[in-house]
Amino acid sequence: MPLVTIIIPVYNTDKYLKQCLDSVVNQTYKNIEIIVINDASTDYSYTILKHYVKEHKNIKLINNYINLGVSTSRNLGLNAANGDYVYFLDSDDYIELETIKKMVNLSLIYEVPLIEGTLSNRKFHLLAKPTPVKEETVYDDITKKNNIKNHSGYVCNKLYNHRKIEDLRFPEQLIYEDIAFSYPCLFNCERSVLTNKAFYFYRKNPQSITHKNRFVPNEKIFDLYTILDILKERCEKSGVYELYQDQIETILKNKAYIPLLQTATWRQIKKDDKIQILNNLYQFSRKEYHIAPIKDIDWEGLELKENIWLQMKQRLLQQYINENVQDVMFENSIKHTRRILSKYVK
Image (cartoon, rainbow, N blue to C red; front, side, top):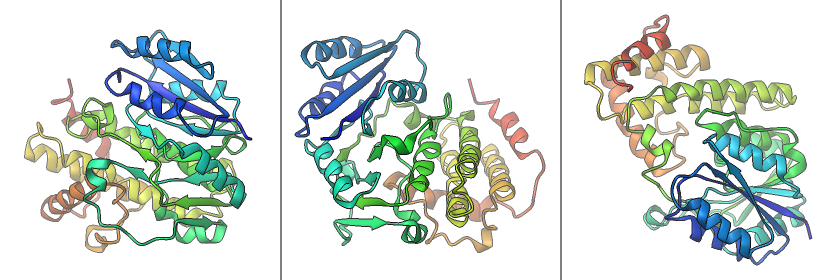
């Protein structure tokens, strides 16, 4: 029975932490080591963690005395992991009690190093239209190329064979870090299985950094461009870029729209400044990642539909772009954007 390491970074999630930990310690699959990283929480999270460590011998607690961020915390977990498989879980989410058993079984049955499940937010999952798909789909190098859009960039809905991770780690002090980890892992696996079963249940936590950044003017939007460069560099280094070049470039193009989506939701920023920022980011993405000119964009086919938030904001972005963005190249667009943002970023 393979050993599975579950890595859980924790920062100020005492409201949800017990449900998260209960969903792990009560897994029907028993050969599990649980590594929790307390990232200098200031609420009762550390107290809760110490209680669970005392009650469950398979939990290992790493305590950061200063806040290092989710990427560093996950990397610390990876450095301490002994499992044949690795599974990531965020501490404000939880998993179905047979998650690990079912995912390990799928990996062994199909002899694949990567199993990807379905993310589910119960609130929105009930509103979504059911899509008739196969219960499990096996992807190899050929079918993966044609179906890369079916794979999400999230790290938390996947079971990874530890050998395929090797020395890959999360970029630190950057948001959108999942993209630079999950896609290189996917491309490094000759075969993978995508299941439509919803093993992972996530919350839209209004206190999370990612959620706050969507609505507040900030310079973290530029992190994504660094992440996309890291993604391309890692794929080149591992020797898979040439094989998956078209698919990787499609990911780069599609993800490059995310800062525009985020900017369109900023509530405090004046309309004239927002239009300038959208122009700048659009022109930068067009130049660096070769996204299509406005007139050629296939809005219906554009793969921005990873969740309902993106679907709604994509419509808002389309309206802004159609009304305000010009097909004219500008130099120093990022520098100009930073200058505009300096008026709003505290």
